[in-house]
Image (cartoon, rainbow, N blue to C red):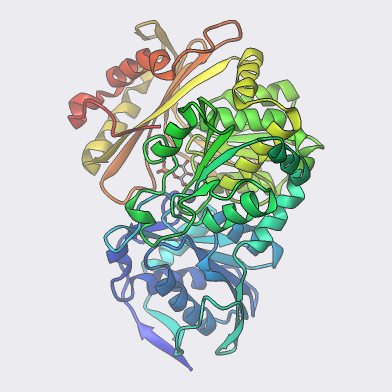
Length: 542
Ligand code: G1P
Ligand code: ZN
């Protein structure tokens, strides 16, 4: 029986860079979650009896929302819901399941790398039939709908057993609880040379993976320990916990510090990797060497042909604007196009669908390819393993040879978190207003060549996105980018992206902080960060 629940709109249901993200307490308000899901169902393009994929990263509130989404889907004319066992689907696995089973879309419940628990964050993201995040036209339509919503529909039925594989009827709709890992693991086997990696493991190749008590634990144990034969215990923090063990499931040098220390230690394994809450991000550390995500993208692209899934070459490489230009140099050497898109994976979707790009990446530890329509943390680890196994080279060797061939883009991102929103917005506005005066100005040895507020016209569908961050480009290929985060849940986060290019023959083996000092000073001189925010140092450096 379908019940109609009266509702009034909530302010603030506008999806950000990656869906709607709020504190759990906000989602727990009566009607808040239901209004949003109903708005998705009201605007989503879907045939009658469509199938919907639902899964999440296992954080607190995941199961509650899944049960409610199932009741609502049944009342809204869906024919089938596919849900991961225990409510678990990593973001890339959800993308794959949507594509493989012809889903009309999916609800991915995650706040990615943000902490979880009753006092922490939750999120809902809608992905469309290609498996990728809803494009802006769709998220905007969802948002518009949230401002006018006056009812939501549900069937009156008890919770289903999410832990038992198999089918259940909910009203006229079939709910299938599917294995969270199997489809994804098979896809990985089809892309990479598992036999070669297994041989390398027998020959002594060692790996350390930190799943950060988040969604990739079951995937990583199955793929690395069971299918590839790495030693038991290769995957640490492998059990997903609702609060991620009280940590931020953010695979960076702050939150994955223990892994970093292992990798810098005497008896370090050959490769260290971590992934985030929902499994789309990755951290890559070689024995004694951290690889920035921007470099990882470039090095993976340069060597991807060593993996069977990419043996035919790449069609193009895409990166988000704040990501370093290292990948562009690889694309140029290969004679394939390089795309520079706004921040957020959704902008890669059209390029991947149109066959214009094969590999994509973001500086925020996101890398992926056309195998799904999300970034994919474990995919990046597997491609690194495949390259190491096929080439017989260490991460250090791969990196040194890469820089010797292409030059090196030293890179760091400085985040100033929970800045008062008004203050952050004013900083960006004043910066934008001052751009016209900057070209030709010198900051130490850095001379501004050009600057702009980044705008993007999608080369496939022509859609335009403006105000996507401020770029200050210096002579010689160095750069500073200023942007406000679109995923934060508290105040504003100012991101300052620093990049210094050293050409072939330049200083290629220095420590990044030393090489970026001048850019840090220039950033403060240009944007008056300290004076305006009172902050003398960033909260997080990645
Ligand atoms: C951040 C990252 C961005 C990524 C997004 C979702 O967005 O910077 O690259 O796509 O998370 O994972 P931001 O908070 O900067 O808007
Ligand atoms: Zn994520």
